[in-house]
Image (cartoon, rainbow over all chains, first blue to last red; front, side, top):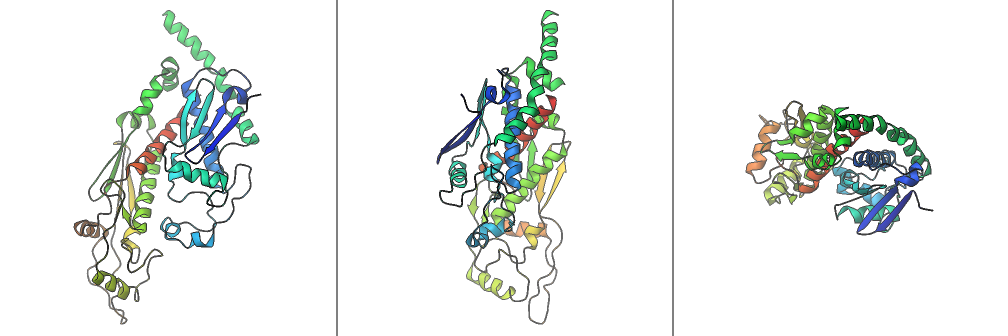
Length: 168
Length: 198
């Protein structure tokens, strides 16, 4: 059985692919614009949850090290110990994007080669404390399905309209 | 409705639409960010422009505090301080409250932090433009233990010009990486608008 979400974690390539047919439980129509909207919702969910300081599974992120909180970078970007949101310059979260899509899937990740290792380190805890923010959990996938389930039905009137236009 | 109909009739329209998103960067003594006319027509939102301006302002200030400027279109280290300047900064730090990123030897245009704290953004919705610039007046420095103050402190705009002439430009450009991030801010808002159409 295909997975709803599959992550690829490599230091130089971090991405997550969402199988829309599996998520919505049906063959989804081929609508590039709809996939962009779904992809954006996925990005927004991840960003919102990360901004609240929570991991993919809803646990609070581990605290910053004392060394880090005393660093110039930390002070320069106005952070505080309570701000555990994986945002320093904003470059990593701000460039997380839809990297590709096809009829039945949307893949998110980074096109910037500098951001992949950063994301990899946070997700796996390779060189920093592990703070896995990347992807959606089961509840979030169900909410995504609920959010867009009517978007497929709404195509139908527009298709009728299209037929009328074609027929003149 | 028109956007949705167009996108359903012409699926490839979305691709050309995305390619037209651009955040043009220019400026000398301020940073001017402009969205393309196509995007501005669809966005019609000073909220998006305000977000772009805020992200740009935070990026400019954060990098300056770290000792880097993007004023010339790429991230570069600010010119080092002369020994006399370092000595003067050490002296002034005894009589003035210093910024949390102050260090006598660090070239990051931060002694008291007034200059960087003065940065503002201003949105012009009709032009699709947002400006980022230093503004306002400055508090005089205390120059001695007696409490003497510096006379006629320059405005922050005047200080910007002075810094630029001294080879430490602070505002007027962004690195490519930050510009790409700002383009993403706009792209994301366009997608959210799309979601509402569905």
